[in-house]
Amino acid sequence: MEFIFYLFIILTAAILQTSTGFGFSIMATPFLLLLFSPQEAMQMNILLSLVISFSLVWKIRYDIDVALLKKVMIGSVVGAPFGSILFALIDVTTFKLIIALLLLGLTILLIKNLSIQQTSSRDYGVGLVSGMLTTSIGMAGPPLLLYFASTQKKKETIRATSLAYYIFIYLISLLSQLTIEGTSKVVWLNSMYALPIVFIGLILGQMLFKKLNQKLFLTFVYFLLIAAGMMLLIQSIWTML
Image 1 (cartoon, rainbow, N blue to C red):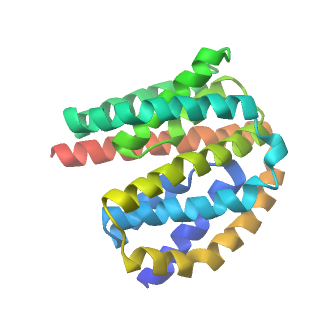
Image 2 (cartoon, rainbow, N blue to C red):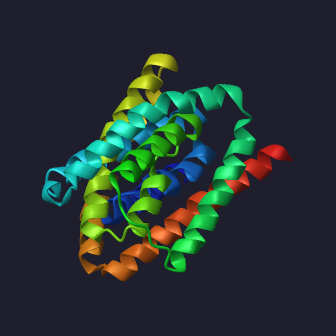
């Protein structure tokens, strides 16, 4: 029964990641933590996200905003060490609570049609914040989603650029995890078992993406941002109790 639940989680998350370019970790991680240790859940999440991103990125490469991607990547490399310092120096639970409230507040503003102008400095800045959040709380995606949605990027650009960025940031995260914390047989066996389900999710996700118009796509973005904010909020409050 647990294995069927695991495969259902992976299928749902794969469909979401393929159709929107993000959301695998937001959808899968809370449920994987019910079945595996935090380290195992994180590594499986990274591995399967990489499989999806590598499988799709070549096909949709022409939709990638290359100039934006380069700036975000450079910003994230600069931000990553600061995230590690934050993780070491501050109370992570309080930091998660602050990020959760900011994320929920900004998402509400987005729903109410918050719009900002894209600039080169903001491109670097969102990468820096993403890099910081990756190494401090393991959450690279929300800063990008907030920025892409508020600058009114097309759904094709959001999906392709997000997937390309995740290849970069998740490879760094995976290498860091393997070097510092090691891995286990459980991670690689369960990831291998999930591969057929991931590829089914890829097919279904592609079909769903074609049916999503821009408005519905952005609705998915808002839903995932709220889900990420609520997940952080619940984690923070639960830890404080």
